[in-house]
Image (cartoon, rainbow, N blue to C red; front, side, top):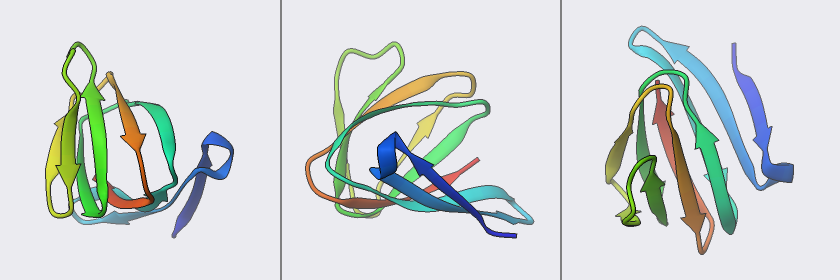
Length: 92
């Protein structure tokens, strides 16, 4: 079954699905700054565009562009700054 997700007053939307390798969402973020919390570990991949990312406990923002991924620990949080619409894949 496909699950629809909407966050931050419609500025982040995704579709969730399950595979034999686990759960994933594919989505789009509009311009803005967002903070996400994680239950388990996640791998975020930028499909198109770029995003600035600040992982919990870090002080340096990192830029990730199309084709790049980053790992987010479980039971954590991360901040994202988006300057133009970006699409992503989140695997967890």
